[in-house]
Every structure is written in structure tokens, then in C-alpha cells.
Image 1 (cartoon, helix red, strand yellow):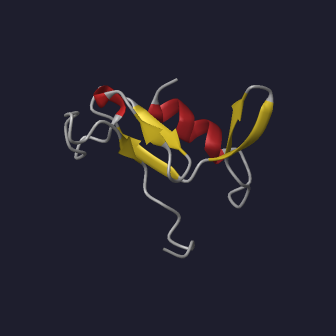
Image 2: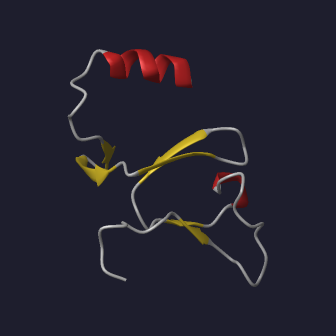
Length: 81
């Protein structure tokens, strides 16, 4: 599915509905973050998810190095720090 197809399908759904990701038979992982990955795909993720492979990091994330072995999606801004 490409971005245009996704947008068209989303237009037909209620605009205030929660968006979740189906994983292992359960749709309990919310989609909180959307970004363009270095490999050109659009990634939908939950808050504070670890990403190991450099190709799935956002285009502006630091490159994989021993000092930065993985990248995390942002934390929920509503959560206390």
C-alpha cells in the first residue's frame, strides 16, 4: 500500500477513531508516531519503540554507530519525565 492509497482509505473512516496496529492477533498497539524512514517507507509506530536497523530510522535520526546502537521513537508528551 502506498501513502495515497492509505489516505483514500482513511477518508472513509470516522475521523475521531483511534488508530492501532494489529500484531499477533491483537490490535492493542496504538499508532502515535508517523515518519518517513531512511529507506523511503512511511513508518507508523507507538511511542518509545526501539529501532535497531538504520534503514527504519527517521531520515533525520543519527546513523547507526556503536555509540548510538538503536533509536527510539519519541516518548508520550503527556507522560511525566
